[in-house]
Length: 534
Image 1: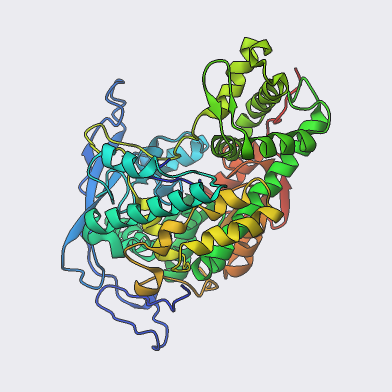
Image 2: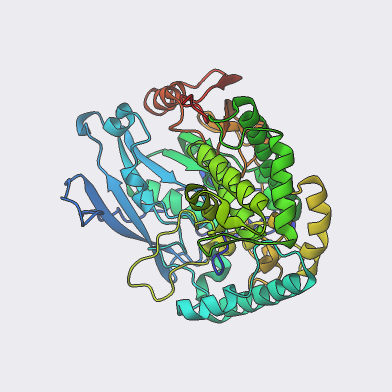
């Protein structure tokens, strides 16, 4: 669930609809599990090779599954959901399908059918099914521009971390132009992008592959999909794992406060990173000599007023610096390289008017901080004139209620950065497009709870102590809010945990294959050290 700008880089009562059933805001809650399942067409799987540059392993099937554009009109227009299946290695002992979502929102999950992060027993017993949710990549992508040139003309006017009044005004004006383009170009899908519709699509796909209950693993934003499913269809839960958790109740009721707490989560992870770096010391952590906190703060504060131009011609700005630091905190494997880049930038800054005195290798490391952070989880298709999709805001602006005045975000930025000096302003300028988004959270159908319905089987919640994007408090809140769940914790700096610990992977396999629920209260360690001995 990274902070992604697709062009640069209102607490409403939910209306819960099931096919053929209308529910008003004042009506008694309707249990979708109590409504007879509508018959759906089976998935028409066709053999395919998702990696055409490589030999066909003959283990994959593809499909495009049609779902209603608007579930209030289930017999109306449809959209296609792109699905990819890796068939179970042991079909004689196949349990069912395991649906996967990597997060975002807007993350393409299609190729996740090829993931190897699960143990062999899971790959033997399940068809792994990846899919692009509605509006994402191969699934009728929600697009606000028709060409990349049009997108760049708007996006290039934005500053990722605007500080001066000119930067702030230009960024807010560009974001307003962005949402105007969305209103012009995005089409009929715009008001139907909320998570409630993604979950309805998922339940249709569950039925269409022939499974009586759902098996699902969701990461980051995917935890909202999983938790929403668990509360809309609690009796249909066989095994649901959610890793890198959002706080669903806060997210669906107060977008601004949720984002403030996200900024706090990044700051907590950064602080722990700097402490562990200093404890490891150089050369294990290249930035580990001296007071790492003071050195980092000095770099950030320097960049706030003075970008650093390196001998190779690249320029480190506050925006590129903040984006790269945030990106590195997502993965433990990037923490040591980040330390090299920070130390290299520190060397370049101290070289002052003579940056050429810095070693060439050091300059190369520093230049990594001059690059815009990569857009996570996006898969631009080669035939696409506009290489992004706008599903990130398409979902968030419908799920998360925000103020309708874009200036509110500029006003809170100063207050947020007092508590989160590195990421407060960065996070405050993530969501201004939602203030003028063509469809608003208060006007569309959303699922905002309740979150405590008792599922047929417990949900497995996983949280890292120092997850930057979804802080650990969110995982604890998720576990408390759900009606039947258990929390497993991992002591690491990283967003999401599956694949980082053999012990955790074993728990995941036992839960998925055998239905064995982990004991509550366990705290695990990752297999690898962020700063291994040299």
